[in-house]
Every structure is written in C-alpha cells, then in structure tokens.
Image (tube, rainbow, N blue to C red; front, side):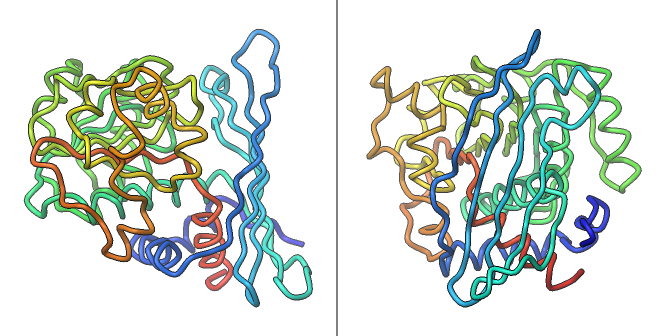
Length: 311
C-alpha cells in the first residue's frame, strides 16, 4: 500500500478547506480518546516522546496516528515530529490509506490555531509575530495569514540563521516576513503572537503584551514546558481558550504551572474549541486573549479524512 508523502499530503490540505474541516469536526464531534504518551530516553539528547492517538466517527473512518517528537532533531537538521497516520474503515477495520504524520500534524495544528484566532480575534488586527523557526512556525505563518489580512508579519527565534532561512522560504511562497532581534519590543507591537517552541521556561512575558493582543501558545506540549509566564494568564483570566479541556488539564504546562502557583484556576478558562465553534463562549477580553493547544486526535481525523477524499 502506498504511503502518501508529505508533498502529497500538503497538496490535499489547502488551508481554507482544512480550517473548515477542523471547524466542522469540533462543531459536530469525533470520538478521540486521550492520547497515550510515552517518554523514551535518548543518549546525550532530550527525551523522545512517543504518541499514540486514535480517533473515529461511527460508521465512517478510524484514524490512528503513531508519531514521535524528538527535540534533539533540531540539532540534527531533521524534523522534530515524524510518524504515520493509518486510515481504516470504521465498520470493517480494513486499512484504506497510510500517510505522513509529520505533515498532517503540522498543518492540522496550524489550522486549529488559525481557527481559534478567527473565532476570537478582532477583524482589525494588523500585525503578527511568530516565535520559533521550526516546521510548525512555517505552517502557522501560512494558516494565520489565511484568516486575517496582516500588514506586518515578524519572526523571532533564538537561532537567527534559522529565522533568516525560514523568512526566505516564506518569501519564496509569497509571504513577506521580517526577522526581528528584540523579542520584547516585537511583542509590544504585535496584535497576534503565535509561539511554537520547545521552551521549558517563559519566552513571552505578560507585561510585554499590549491590551487586546491575542497569544497563541502551541509549542509547550508537556507539563514541564511553557512559553509564557503567569502574568500573561492572569491578564487573560476569563478569556483563556484551549483546544480540549482533557488535553489541556493533562499536558498544557503553561496552564498547569500557573494553576500550581495559584495564579489562575480552572474556572479562568473560558471555553474549548468545540464550544467556540458552536458559538458557546464568553466575550473576548479587552486586555488579552490566550489560546493554548496541545493537539487532539480529532484534528488528525479531520485532516486525514480530507486527504483520503482528495488523494
């Protein structure tokens, strides 16, 4: 059976169609049990995380993702996320397709962030700041620019050479991005800030952000990781959103660490993405909004189903 390559997967997942598919899946619902995550020791490098994620819709399809997240790959010059997604018939169990999980994961994750921004952010936002320089930031740049028309897109990363290389790739695709060196100043100017890093301590501080900004936190997917500080979450009380409560309460280090410090409580989280898609949400904060995602099999199902329909 052919394994659909990342290039074929990408061709089957145009942004507007993918964002709509993710929106529909959150609104209508998909069975997506909590993912199984296992830490695998790697000699002389950060631990690898092995993820097993099933999802299905009764009478339709089953998507099963087997993936790894290896932070040490950044130093090896290879993608951090890799794996496969198997698509099965939900009645017979017959495998109907196999596809690259890295591309599906990057695109569906970016689609979820763009969808959240579309549901939360004002139409008048004009500036986007991207924090990080990996594969996911590449996709986040594209997805965010589909739902809002930005006058300015800036990029910051610890590795300036990687930031410049990514800016060049995005420019070749028609997206003008400027590399910035002053993260604090860039955060103070940005209407929307999208972070996808492997940070274990805050990079974007709450006191740097202007009122009405939207903070999209994507990278910290373990309880010991975080990309922002307690101050940002305190400012966003009542306007904090998550992709799923189950995933966030189990894995979202930004939220879990703030809760452990009594900076925020569970009640300060306004809604999950399903409630946002159904129009069941609290009003946006005039100070700050935050969307925290850790990923869900529901998004894999939506993307894999779309790939299968188009392949």
